[in-house]
Structures are given as C-alpha cells and as structure tokens.
Image (cartoon, rainbow, N blue to C red; front, side, top):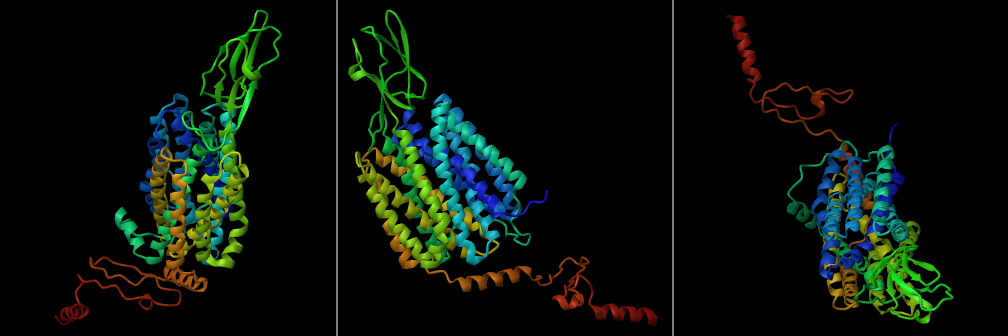
Length: 536
C-alpha cells in the first residue's frame, strides 16, 4: 500500500503520543513525593526526561533530514512504549530508581514533537506554516485533555500501575497506526551537510538574530509553562505532610448496625492511597461481620474511635487529586479550541509577533493570579486556569511558525531539533527550581514565573520583527529553484573518465563547465605526437 505524506496522520501520531505523555506527567511529581522524595529530588526526576531529550533531539532531527521523518517517528514511538512499561513496573515496586530509568528512556527516544514539526514544514507553504503548526498545539491540547482523564480513570480502576500500562497500550497502538499509514514527507533533494559538533550546531543557529530572539523567547515561555505543569497538581492536591490550596473529601459512612460497640479491623493505614471498591475496614459484632469498601479513590484518613464511630463515619477519603486531573482536562480543552479554531484568524489579525507578545503578557497575569485562588473560591481558580490556557495557547503556534519561516528548506529538521533542545533545557531547569521553591513557599514559583513571562513579552515586543509573508514566499521560491538547478560541473583531479548527460536538446558542453583532466596530456602534444608518428 502506497503511503502518502498526510497532515491528518501526523496529527494523529503526535496526538496519541501526547495522550500517553499526559497520562504519566501529572502523576510523576506526586508519585515521587509519595515514595519519599524531597522537592528537589522530585524536580530531578521530572527533569530527567527533558535532559535526555536535550541531548538527543537535535541528533534525531539531523537523522530525520538524512533518512526521513517516518523512520525516526517510528523509533521514537516504540521507545515511548517501552518507557511506559518501565514506568508501570516502577510504580508497582515503588522504586524511585525505576521511575528515573523510565523517564530517561522516554527522553532518549523523545523526538516526536521536533520531527513532526519538520514533517509539517515539509508539506506546508511558508504562508500556511504558522497556521498548520497550530495543529501541533491542538494535538498537545487534546493530549492533555484525554491523557489526564485516562490517567485518573486508570488509576481508579487498575490501581497505581494503571496509568503506566494504559500509556504503554496507547503508544503501542500508535506505533501500529504509524507503521501502516504514515508516509514520508522529506523530499529527496533535501540532503543535509554532515552534522557539526553540538556546540557549533547551537551557536550557529543563535548567530542569526531573529532565530536567537525567537529561541530565547521560546525558552522563557517554556520555562514558565513547565513550572506550572510540574507544580500544579502538588500545589492543588498537597501531600501527607503539606495540605494543598483546595481539598475535596468524602466521608465513609458507617453501615446500619443494630448491635453496639462494633470492633473495627482495619485493612489500610492513615495516609495510604486506596482504590474505589477496595476494602478498608471490617466491622465485627457478636452477630455479624460488615466489610466497608472505599467509595472513591484517594488518600484515606481513618477516624480514631473506641466505642462508636464519631459523627457516623469510619474514615474520610481525600479525592482532590482526581479533581486536579480534571482541572488539567479543563485547561487542555480550552487550549485545543483556541489552537484549533482561532490561531489562523488571530495570526491574520495581529500577525505572529504581536500574538506572541499578547500571549506572553497574559501568561504572566494568569501565573500571578493562580496562587491567589484558594478555597473556597473555586471559581477564581477556574478563571485563572482559563486565562492560563488561552495565553499559553496563542503564543506557541506563531513562535514555532516564525522559527520555521526563518529556516531554509534543507534545515527544517535541524532547526526544529535545536528548538526542541532549547525547550528541553527550560524543562530541565524549570522543575528543579519550581519544585524546590515549592518546599519554601507555595506561591513563590508562580510569582517568579509571572515576572519572567512579562520580561519575555517585552523582549518579543522590542526585538522581534513581523513576518513579511510576501518576502518569505519569494525567498522560499528562490531556494526551491536553486535546489532544482543542476550543480556546476566538477573538476576531475584523478583523471577518471566522466560521463555527463546534457539537458534535452543541448550538448554536455552547454550544460556547465567542462571537467578538466589534469593528468592527461595537453591536446596539442597528443596531436603533434600523432603527426610525428605519421611522418615517421
């Protein structure tokens, strides 16, 4: 079956991959804290994925320029599937080292976003590139709608290992889909030069002023976003030692028992995570035995009692974590709508530059608002999250679009790989700082990120240049023309016979400079030698 390069298929590939990522990411800091990690250790655990991605993403981008986008996407998807299996096993054995290994493996193979961006650039004209890059953002948003929802449901239905196995299954299905349907987008003439050393590769990109400015803004914006995604669930839910900003709890009532003084036989301990339907207590009387099951999944607090349960309940279950996941679903839904429906009209109205500036300014406002929304004012939290989702959605696609428009047709994979490395660097530093500061003050990381977002907006307003679509289209056409032209003839220094094919209707001599054989004798000498032989 012939496979064709398809925008829909690459969108589905990225979306399914991000669903698996969205299942695991919100739970990772909580799992780390549950297994006894301090804030800075939890930050290191979260950052390990991005550290590996920072080291390997540009190499994957270069490889995709040489061998094609499709095989690289297949390899990275298979690696993600294996990493989620490791994650499930680490959760089963409650191993911090296992969690670290799973995230490092995922980071090594984490090339999907940069290569998918290059894939879209391959099949998009310059004037449509920013709009189509919005599909990456839409896939990102949808992945963070479905992912956290599946994560919460799988944890409730299958226990602590459920999210890992669910993510591995989804990535396995994604691999099958991509193998049979995904076509190649890279054109044969896009033959890159040999890769330079990593430092040269990054510094060469940063010497181009607009690319340097765009990547700097992208770094600051990604830093702010990753601080949010690393801390929000922990901030909202809290841990056993430190309560969060909100608390959603459900009492476990005592069943109707006619006999007095039931004796409880506990199956769980205070602070333990329980699943819905899991037995938590058995009440034994002279005439009957009553098993009490957990009505919800969450962290349980047992009531201390001797003769009768106080206030008619045996325990309280804190299910704030589940609500936090659905808050992420809420954010993702808004982000998907913005990036899927409004990015194109907004780019046409404001242009890429001012859309980036407005998005970053609103991002700073939302981050300053978030830590001020405390219980019982839940509507304030929803408002802050909605503003955060809108602002973080409108700057991402035009930033990717402008970066792509400032890159040549033969370096899309390389530029996107370097961009992904810049983002990974922000994702390395962000969790370390944010989760470390969270142990000091619950508001501190948000206020710092708000100031950084405002600084990024000012930098973008002052240094970025608006995209001139007409000039970019003309330059792209000129580059394509140069790629299609026949290269000048080469000089043969080794004296080997070279056969050149001319353009139809022209002789080889008319096509380009004739190749020179420096080892052959001059024509005059050969002729004179032949004449001497004839004369002799």
